[in-house]
Image 1 (cartoon, rainbow, N blue to C red):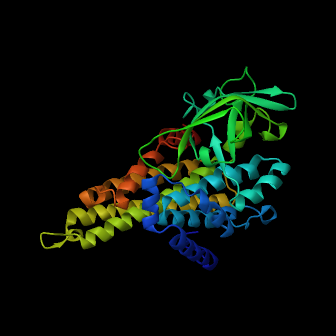
Image 2 (cartoon, helix red, strand yellow):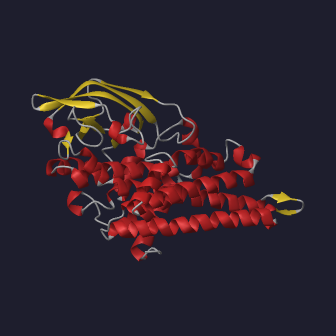
Length: 379
């Protein structure tokens, strides 16, 4: 569970070669400056097998367990968070959603395309008044002949502009409240009636976020994914995958930020010696490494639980909190240690620092995660 086996080490070597070829550090920085998402890498990621690691071979995947997936996510993000992040969404929001509650026809049609990098699915859940309170969804879907008509709006939808489908939560029972009466629909992103506006933001420039309007968007009966009115049950069945994915990639980013800090502390000279020889700096770096190592244990334990088919919802919330707050700790102290060298636009540290601020409230705020943990402890 804690150390990669021989097969996993070979896969990680493949990750290193792939990233050295397709996303070296200078390219990651260039893309951040240019706000360029790595969508054109998806077919290459698919060819390398990274998008199908946990998907059964019958559906075009490799059929490996989640421990291998977590190791790959961490390593990808150590090289470039943008690549680890897009793999998370392809696998967590796309492949695992279709696998968990898609129909057999949807699995046959979509999974081979997802695993080969030819299909990107964006999760369209959040609305202006429905963030942490996802049960406050107002977007509605009404029957129309053999299909449905969707009307409403979504916001902060990652990758919507590059997606093939928007996995959209809509209320199909107008009299329902909360999580009841919500269904999930695979809406083609280019369907008539969809309007999108990109949202400017502070960081994560390679993961564009969008505001979406749905004005009488018509879809066929085959667009419904899962049972009508039970969309939240489907979402709940996949949350541990997306939270495990975020935790693993955030861990990789934290290790990269820490490695950059250590290298700087060895090289930077003040008062005639490296700053890493001063107790204030060396103890701070020791605290950073302890946080990262503790997070790695939590992330690997969660991956093992998923691989074993155990109930991991509480542990997924714990890993998400632990990893995102670890990254904030590491990047905050890393920025302080690098000082002006880290604040310069050419430094990767400022990118880690800017990006890190999103994750403690993105994909389910840490306050909500703590409430989930407390409820499962019987409180």
